[in-house]
Length: 115
Image (tube, rainbow, N blue to C red; front, side):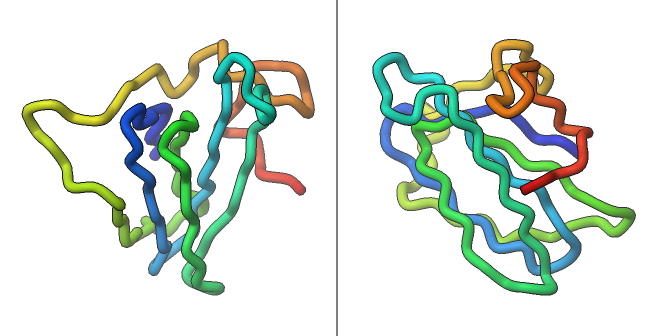
């Protein structure tokens, strides 16, 4: 399952801990004038090696479960959710505007992660 892309404009940061299975977690910066504009980071997190992955909410980010086993993720945020005024912007998971800087092509969630 792919859950992407979204970001938080008002300061929400996301924290992920994968406690079962494996997950690719990606963040993409497209802010004009940003020193990291055009950068895309990929992290593969799994229950085999527990880690906290922090995503600064200003970056577009998303996740994809890897392998045949469903993943289970502990998800935490630094701000309470406001259902009347959610801090969330969305774009399609296959948005052609999210460009992988390594290939110069639109980001492909189904391509195997690489370092």
